[in-house]
Structure formats: structure tokens, C-alpha cells
Image (tube, rainbow, N blue to C red; front, side, top):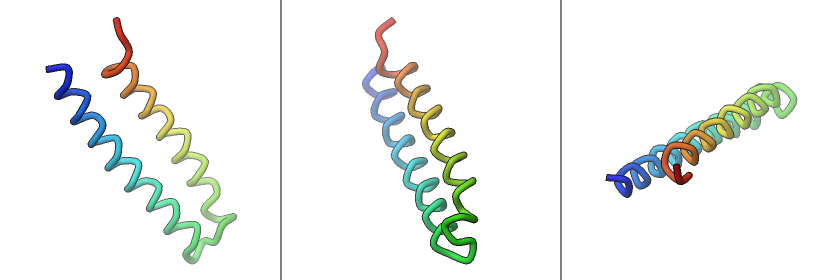
Length: 63
């Protein structure tokens, strides 16, 4: 059961990272430009770091 949680969590983490970073790249290279997309990029990086910590806390860390 623990291995299934690790694998599905890692797949979900990868999909979320790909989507959010792709969205940030699209905003930064599109009409908004780098400075217009910078606030979204900062928010995205902080949220993704929280998601990665939660994955580590729930699936990797030994209790």
C-alpha cells in the first residue's frame, strides 16, 4: 500500500509540476511578458514547494 501511495503521489506531483510550470512559461512568454508573468511565477514556485513538501511528508518521511 505504501508503494502505491509513493507511485501515485509521484505521478500526480509530476503532472501538477508540468501543468503549473507550463502555464507560467506560457504567461511569461506571451502577451504579459516576463515582468507581467513574474508575480504568477513567484506564486507558482511557492505553491509547488508546498506541494512537494506535503508529498515528502505524507509518502517519504518515516514516522
